[in-house]
Image (tube, rainbow, N blue to C red; front, side):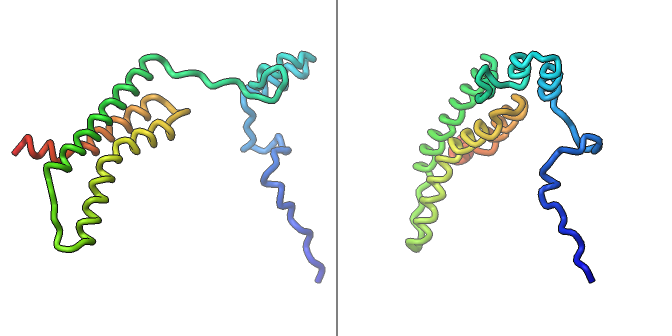
Amino acid sequence: MPRPPAPDDDAALRWDEFDDPSYVESDAAIAARAAAEAGDDADARDASGTGATGDAPAAPERPATGQRLLTALFALVYVAWSVGWIIGVGLVPLSGPTLVVEVMYQFSEFLAIVASALWFAAVVTLTRGGRAVHRFGWLALGTLVLLPWPIVLGVLA
């Protein structure tokens, strides 16, 4: 029995079938192709997002001033939360029955102190190219989750 022909493993990585319904061409590629067909290759390079040399993409837009100020305000809140955890950790001393318990408790204290800085850095890094609503939603959620509970509960008691 003859072997069937080997499948083309790279077929899934190519977009050479323009009649394929899943093929979508970006607006920049359409503009670049239209400009190239018109014979104006300088406009084609600009429409595709590259400079005159064609090797570097255009710089991303900077966020608005209001967004930067709100992000800075959240940064100050997170710094205050870290200071609150430092103070709160001092209010609740623990001397465990074993060394393992004490080490685990001190490590959890350390994680509580640095959690707000890690949350802020993760949100700002992961939402860099996204919408501002998502960034500020995650930052607002972090302000509620990372409250310095020893101080909050100490004030309420």
